[in-house]
Structure formats: C-alpha cells, structure tokens
Length: 115
Picture: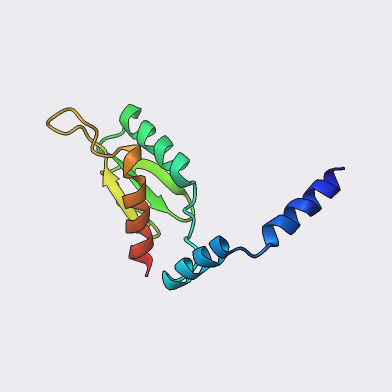
C-alpha cells in the first residue's frame, strides 16, 4: 500500500502544470532555485534566543555554512568561514536588535554576499 501511495505521489509531482512552469521560469530568471541556509529559520530563531540568554560578552550571532547560525562572544574574532554576523543587544527602546522576523533580510544578505 505504501509503495502505491509513493508511486502515485511521485507521478503527481512530476506532472507538468502551468503554475509549475511559471515558477520554474521565475526561479530561472533569478538564477535558479533559491538556496537553503544551514539550519534555516529555525536555526536562526534558536540562535537569537541563545544570544539573549547567554552569559557571553558581547554575544554575536554568526553564520557559516559549516555551523549554520551560532552564538559566540563578539570579543573573539570570527572564524574565516563566517559570512554574516550581528551583535545581539537591546536597543534604547528595549527591543531586541535581532528578531526572528529579520530572517528574510538576513537570508538575502547572506546569499547576496556569496555572489
């Protein structure tokens, strides 16, 4: 039974539709399918939480493909493979400097920085 469902799902996924063709054209115009980041939004959100509860000095959220989003002390220099970082602090209004809703912008910064 499971094999029949898998086969049916594969056939449905491979079917050509106008909406799939339009999405493929749009992605092709942008250079291909959007790249995924190591850890994704969940990893970004987890790193933000860690940055605001850690006892590290100047907690900094950093991203590398090898480690994904992680928190390190901003006092220490970043590893050579780190391609994005942001200091985690509270602003004068009491808001966090980095929020989970920042993920789309952060993702684009990382991907744009690689090209």
